[in-house]
Image (cartoon, rainbow, N blue to C red; front, side, top):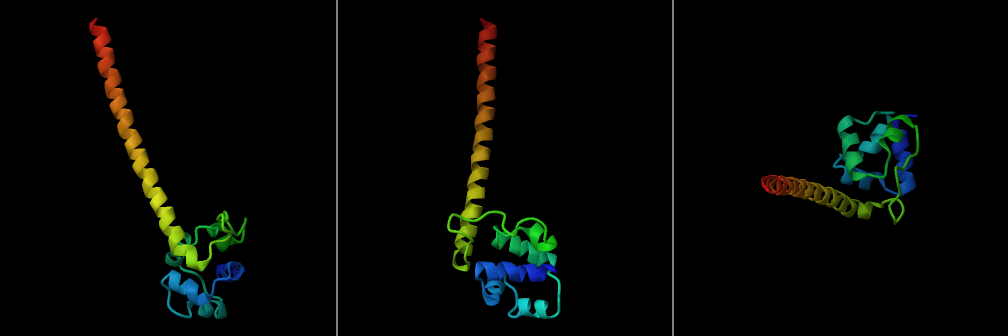
Length: 126
């Protein structure tokens, strides 16, 4: 079975139309149907878009058929097409927030190290 066939299985499972999938991934109309009819392949640029827009879909499963189709399910179940963009925004804003926290923690650690050095110097002077 080719990745395009597994993609159809995922779309059927998630109740996502070809048109909606194509629109979400900025593909031309009829792309999926054409690839299915011609037993075509899915390009790496499209795989990248799928990974971003469909975080629940296992790319390993899509490409090889190995493992589970879904990496995880959202609290609402599989993410439906109307929720993709909101889920994506939340996902990326969470990553941004995590990175901001990490940077702030690193700054605080440096500041703490500087203060410890100052305190040690003061004790050494006594």
